[in-house]
Length: 486
Image (tube, rainbow, N blue to C red; front, side):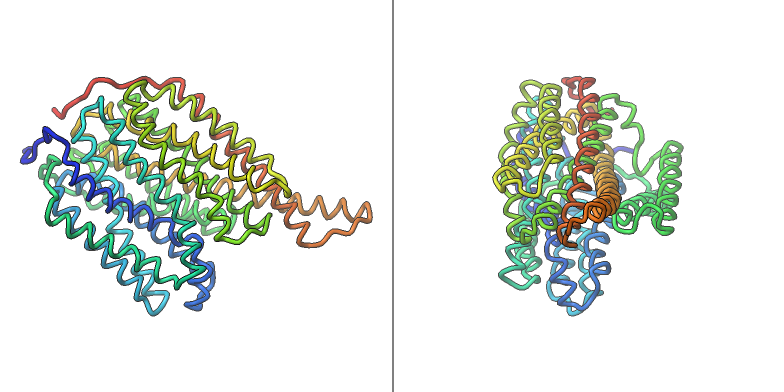
């Protein structure tokens, strides 16, 4: 039986949304904060870099596994206690990571952080959807986009600065006060605005979700380093595909599914999910390839390379609320087409970078690319969610976050693998040509040129992803009618 104890507020609860914003911001920021700091942390704690990568991989895996289950928790439990519990878990994980005496304790802290943070974004998105009417939702979700995009983008720059000037533990120590403040304010001002009802949790679905999404995320995240032919990569990907397929089939048969597949019956939601997935593949891969070029080909220090990426992050932060307001006025299609054309052209220009490309040119093209992406992601996602009934919002947001995370992982793996394979073959060709012509070439110059060739091809593949998304965007239609739960 439905127990709608909470009503949609007449006036949006701005203070409550601000509290949720802080929680989501620290969760998103935390996701990318260790990217530049890993070498320092692994050296300090005496573990290999491959082992240290688990601080990032483990966090991603736990988040990816729990996000599909967030729909159940948001439907079953009230907003206030759910956020408070999630933030307490996140804060405890952050504290544990900050004081960790060993790598094992640090990894445990990161995993506990991931458990808490995995509910932040879905909670905030659902509160935003139910608090604003369709005609004002673009501007509201644009502000959410500022958090979703800007926080991860500034993570590497901030991380580079802190590692260069302070101890790596400051990365966690600076997050902890924000987490505690958000928690304290939530006790004071958080309200139960989301409707909830008693639903049963199918535990076997959670097992399948863990095996399926965990297998896919782990397989694709390690394929970039270990190669597609690695037995562990192949095995985890096969297990992941079987797990996800079984999970989907089971959801279709359950009376109260963990993740309601009925969301994909909406053509605009299904189309938005596909475009978001393809664009995530291009975007996340590009965020890996650009630092690879800047640091490994050009030899620029991590801190400086982070600063080079910062203007792009700032542009995305500024544009996200503006894009939201434009979405309310003109709908998703013009924004998506314009944004994807800009993204496609700028990605192609990154495929033409040379060893002597100027700093200004690199920063300019990367920033323009971020500008293009800022016009696309949030409008497409908001339009897709607008096409759902209110009772499907938790399932729509959960599926959307999961799809973006898995697609980003797949895109990164594909582009890194393409880069590695092309660099290896190009290196062999360059060495052969040098020997044939009797030209002397240093190992450093050979490595740089080979890697540049690999990055060129990877950016061309990323351009292809963007073109696919562009073609699909021509089929977008604006959703104007606000649908309520039956």
